Image (tube, rainbow, N blue to C red; front, side, top):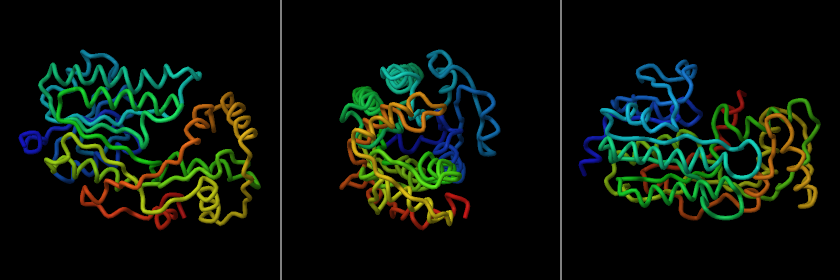
Length: 300
């Protein structure tokens, strides 16, 4: 109960990112004092007014101990979707190594409450990304701290890596060849994800719990692309690729700037990102239908 009552000073790792900005704004609205912790001082301009900012090497235990001084709670949102190369080491550094260093810094500083971002089906399949997420989850579960895990499907919102990314790809192209076109997702609204973290802070029963976070509608990757084009008022075709060509597309994408699709993305696409156990209602949140938010997401 103390972890709930005393969670007023909150350090947010990755608080200047896509989910972080939405979460920090909500925490400030609730009267929490927020310290955004990031590796780059230039991200200060993306931090909502009212939060403090501290930049340094987030892989360094000494820096994290200083960042967590005076804090009651740590929120870890740090994440990447692609790594340099394809051996899993980049994902392990961001998820496993950082989580281990963070947990040590929290224990050293007497900070017990942790809200950790994970991913739906973390630890399952052959994806380096999901494997690293699963290893990080295991460290959190064994930490002895007052933890809560959040496992979203793909997160949708203005500037996201889903609808907005496809809008960029479709802008000047008549259509899109698409590997993994039949893979199903349950896109979850970024505001619902932020609310899930905020609500969990106020719920003692969230300690030691893991919540799948998904939207109310399941849609295939091809449907997501078509919805993107339709919302933008574009006539575009989607060409579903057979597995052999899908793997080839990922192989080519691995070497393109920005990795529009990578080998590891292809591995992740071998499993649907859906759940029958939506944690949003358990956290007092009515899941938002992302389709109604598409004009906001894509700018009209």
